[in-house]
Image (cartoon, rainbow, N blue to C red; front, side, top):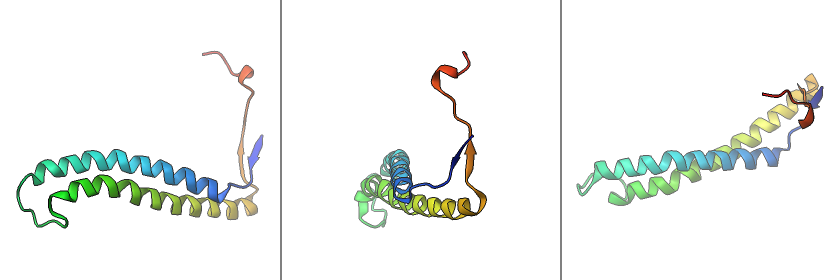
Length: 102
């Protein structure tokens, strides 16, 4: 058994941030396109008028990325704190040549 005793806070923050930024883009693009079809040419009273859907496409990945970075760092810090007291997460690794055939 191998034990994960510590996770790099910066590394986890980058991975979480980039992953959630990608998810934000995946969510933001369809949402922005959907909003643009609803808004159309009507004066909706939304902030930034008809540019609002385009801003959603840009803002979603940024907000998701920032939140992912913050929570990735927080989760890594919490894991490191808890693993000092519990000994870490045990995982079992195997060599690629020892894997069972499918």
